Amino acid sequence: SLAEAMAERESLIDALHRELEALRAELQLFRSQSNYNEEQLRLRINDLESTIAELDSELLAERQSKESILAQVEAAAASAEAVTRVVEEEKGRRMAEEKFNKMKEVYQKLRNEHITLIRTKAEIEKQLATEKENFNAERRALQESQENARRLEKQITHQAEAQKSTLEVNQREQGAVRDELHRIHAEYEKVTEERDTLEVTLYELRTQMSASSQKAANEMSSVMSQWDSSLHNCVVGAAEATITVISQATSYFDHELHATIKCTPDYTLVYASPIFESLTFVKDTYSQYLMDIHKAPHLLRGLSVWANQLATFLLNAKATSHASPNIERAENLVSALEDLAKKCIDTLHGIQNKQNLESGFASIKEHFERCCELVRNCEDQSPSREDVAEALSREMEAMNEAIMQAVERFTSMLEDTRAKDSGIQLEVNEGIIGTCSELMAAVRLLIIRASELQKEIVAAG
Image (cartoon, rainbow, N blue to C red; front, side, top):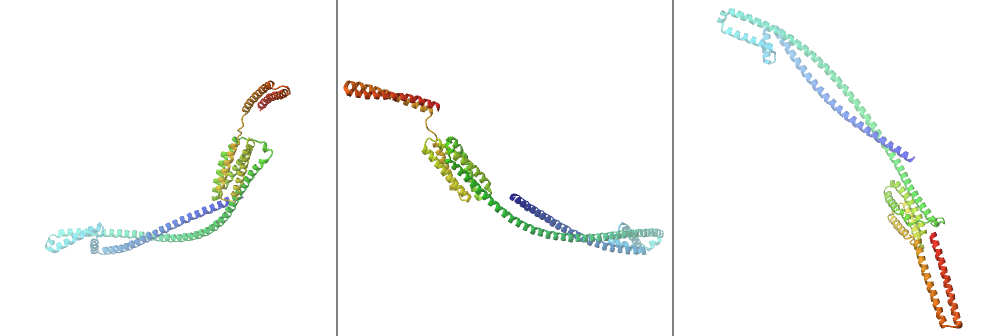
């Protein structure tokens, strides 16, 4: 069906939109991760290059230090003077260890003593024993220096081996770092290729989605056009149905069976307020329908309610005219009802053609108010049965009194005639007066019987 097709297309469009948003989010995340990984790799490469440079510098320094120490060791092993020079060099360099400082002090002491011996040659001879002891001390110091030199050589050798091991470890680490760098470069190239592939896929998906969206938009436009046309056709059909309902209601005006139906004005006017509300609702929803065709369902509901209420009002108002004692008012009401029906039908034709009906609805309201006023005027204002009975009773009494007065006048006239006339004239006058008296008596009897009959009629309703 149309609704299912529209729902399916809307779901397809929503799915495509969600897929596009997901791809966009994935691409954005991928770009962010790629940029982050690239920056981290660049920083890592810089750190590794700095580390390599530092290691190279340290390695060169270690090599130089090792060569210097080896040279010093060889010189120390050659002679005591070499040890002295090593001590002096260590003193100049100020980087020898504490044991070299001790050796330097011994050497300085020996030198000072030697200078003293040269200056005091005579005293040396006297102090030969002392010098021998000093010589022995010097020899012991020299032995200690040699021992220290050997220990230093061992220590330097051990340090050289440690530095060599460290160098080998650094070289291995440097190789591992280079391998890691190559691996990272390869991974970066792979990620770049995947990013390019994803960008191509995203472009294809965007192209496909754009084509699908355009196709869906075209189909949606076609469906909406058909939907709008269907809605307008529904409004046209509803207006036509309303016209049919109103026409059928007015067709019963001359129906013989409806002529026997009567209705009170109060009951007919019960529909006045709902009809005003329905008319206002139809007017407002029609104005909204002209601006937005999707308001058609509200207009359809308003037309349906208004049609039923108006048809009921027309039939009840026509029945009210049957009960009106004033024929002229009844005819005016029927004529106003027909005008109202015609105006409503004309307005419904305008709704079918989507015309501006502001004045049309106002005219319907005026006609309807006039019909309601005429319905109120059709109220039966004739007297009640009790009032009729009382009026007839008073009228009968007045007629009876008038007849009695007439009889008395006839009697007085008869007496006057007898006093004035004689002979044939008297007989003629007596006959006329007697006939009149008999006629009055008969009329009085007729009035009495009519009064009794009227009472029976009033009692019977």
